[in-house]
Image (cartoon, rainbow, N blue to C red; front, side):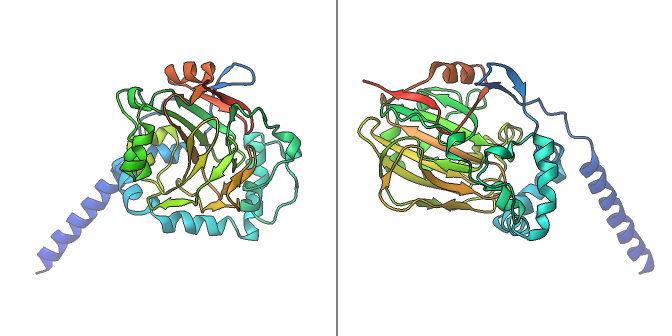
Length: 323
């Protein structure tokens, strides 16, 4: 009897040792995330908050198990979001500002009650001028952008992958309107301004919510799980316009995004007007256009064709109406 118990203990100890060995086994080095700074034209390398943690989660067997059972779950992101609402989280603000070179002079206020208060800060209107030409589409957010003029015939992030609009919208009937349409993806990193704005003028539909998980939308994660956009929680609105037809604007949640907050009220959208904001974490805004309705700016398409994101600012031109 005792011998049996000893053997069981040995087996348990051995299993724990194996699990620890796998957990701490070095993960492969991730490729640096390169992007084009649109303001200067320079090729830059993104500084990724929690990069080692992301690599471990998406490239290590124990990390992947942790991701599947814990990290992707709503309660994990919600719990972390609540922590970032507490006054004690203010201690994280200054180190974060210094680490990522955030310019607080363009924020409406410089004193914050919590990290989330800082994270969801509003900017002075002069900080993000809006291109008001009615034939111009503007970026809905600050972030890194990729664009495809034909979503049905273009590689998406990983070569050979086609973006499944029907799965993404969870509506095969609506998706038919965007066959061979255009796709724009703006990825917000944790150090970006996290309010999102309307890219065009129009009439807005009620918000549709699609339940899902909270995987990271960082390229480190996307290169391991390209289906993330169709798995994560997301909310979308249809903007009916005179110049661009029906534009679908989708906000996608991600790991440690406490909430997607919709602040706009009413049925009319003014280009550049705030639509809502993300609480703590990286996240994404996706725009879908019907076929032949938008001419995406050439530099954005060219950079995407090279596998590079382009940094953009809220309110700047990203495309024009096709006559």
